[in-house]
Image (cartoon, rainbow, N blue to C red; front, side, top):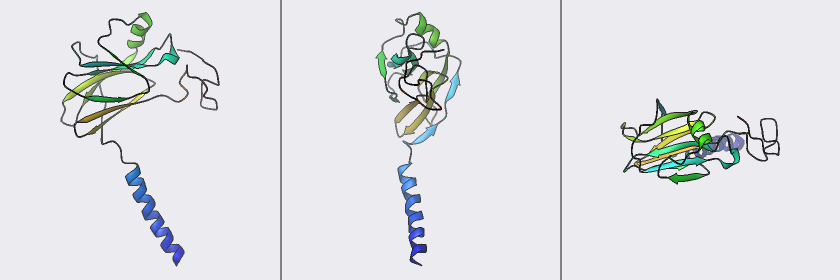
Length: 162
């Protein structure tokens, strides 16, 4: 009898811990593709820097924040720039192979845009006035150091590929 009661409370406690511990940042928003990021003035442009993939893929993407808006980016290496005029040939070529997306809140207000290589994945979260753009790095991304195993690419050495 005590065992039954124990499992009942254990299951209820596990469900409660799961519900509280797995609560996301806020509401998940859908990524909407656009044909291109509109030309214009942006408050901030953030380069998602990937120096381990030089020279062929120096950036995972770019985030363009509209004036007066705030977008928090979750990515290991971020570099704030004023414009993209300083991109070299490889960086421009790399940018041509990125998908472009708009960042909108639940009310449909445009907060910014982002461009991202297709092997990366983005999640947009909203909590109140805050927007979080979370970028996940692909597992076994070519050019990384040290990952070994069945699903890896690096195998303990640097391998830069297309």
